[in-house]
Length: 293
Image (cartoon, rainbow, N blue to C red; front, side, top):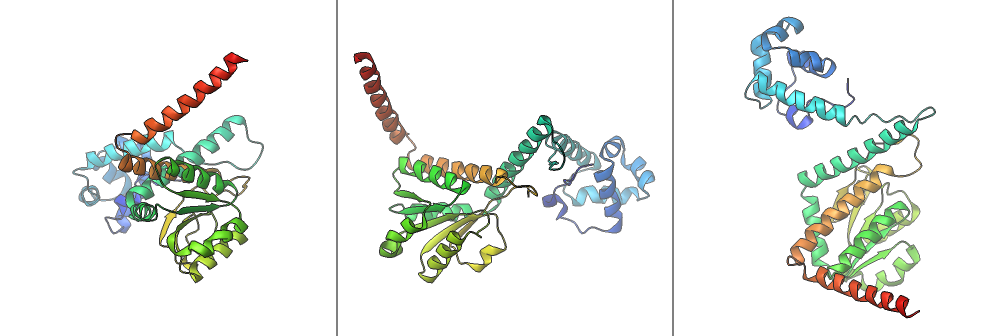
């Protein structure tokens, strides 16, 4: 029924899939509603697998009983019905179909981003690197990725980091040769294929500059030696007019990093109180000028 698996890989990885287990899985995937109506006895008769095999299947997956497996399947089934990620790209799409497509792109990107954050140590190491080089963090990106780089650099400056956003290769080279041993570079690039990004990555490798990469490209990253790699995820687009999912994935990742650092550095929110006070003072000056006109 769904392109996505009913039973998640994190659960399936616990067992070796035998031919009998595959029969159970196929039935769950293709006839989910029917599966939920069965008990172990009726299911055994329906798919020609012994009742003891069905019970062992549930236990090996980590469930206490067949009934607990059905509860999990029911929850997953409702979840996937609500968040069906089937993207339509051909034909004359209705507004409703376009809305569903964008919803699918956003949901998938955000869910996968948070899943990666929770399961990987790389983000912790990346944050530690940013802290270590708090005197100079440079963020380089082009195109839509530049929106994310500028967003994060601006936020980091609010909590005392010297964070610089660059989207021009000439500006990048204008000072990196001078202070390359005192800085940390973050490259944000979905593909790692643009000429500017490849040129900069080669420069960083040759000069042993500490750098990190945010990317969706798991193959090309093997050609380089970054200190940290944060992988972005999104649904592949056959007809691509913008990096819909990758952009949202990167913004979500930026918010995780900034929120963690701001909480760590400014727990009493003193810095934000000062920022808000300065903004209020500025606004009051504008209001005064308007009154005097």
